[in-house]
Length: 214
Image 1 (tube, helix red, strand yellow):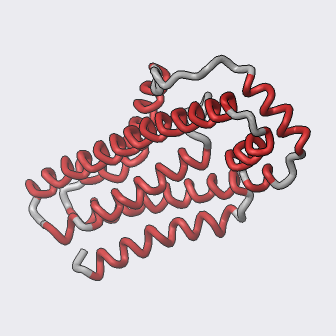
Image 2 (cartoon, helix red, strand yellow; image 1 turned 135 degrees about the horizontal axis):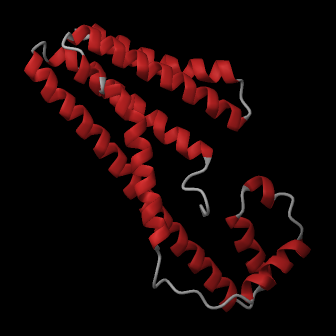
């Protein structure tokens, strides 16, 4: 279960990258829809609304994930505390571990872990979400919204739709490259290649939009 940080680096960067791709697709379609100044302003607000919606979805899904994961943890703990079959307990514990860890853990280690878990107070599902979880949800919303906001802002400063679209796309592609670069460092991949792959996804979206008349 996630504790401490709102999301681990993979989650944080992944949410931002998916948000950027989504907003890039939306803003890229603006020139297909209109060439009028007033309509551009309306679509700017629509793009900002899209950013808000994406942030809300991520925050709500995070809270749902926390509640479900915490409920599952409590269920597993109750099974262990009520079980009298130690061999089955070991299997339950291994199922909850990552495959790489489950493959190397010894029966003695499983026994010690099971004994410690059985000594814990009986868990309750009365409070699956805490105030800290709600604060984390707000932080996720702000993270996604603020990171996707720069992609929409050019439409507030440029009256020429083509220029605004190009600047917006450039910002999104740069952020995709940067996010892919950082993500590669976390995963141990080749930074430049990973960054270029994420950027290529954005380029392909822009190319498809332009082929449709953008």
